[in-house]
Length: 62
Image (cartoon, rainbow, N blue to C red; front, side, top):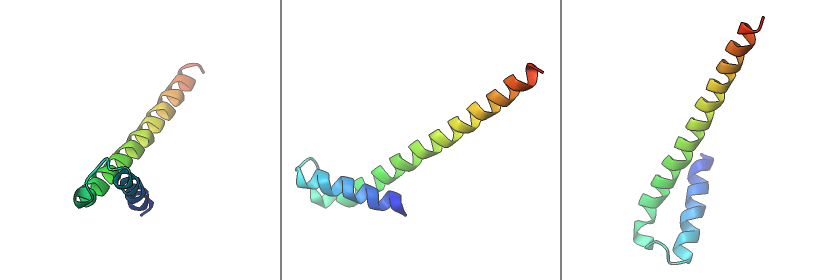
């Protein structure tokens, strides 16, 4: 689960810089993990939609 590791590193850095309170770190790790997964999901769907549109466009030009 690389997204949890990445989220943890982000939160650790924010704690070091006193941006967030260390007692709230667990919640922030979870929130960043959800954000990362949501962005990845959007990119996957967008790529699929672009692929479908291109296939339709190519089909209409035949």
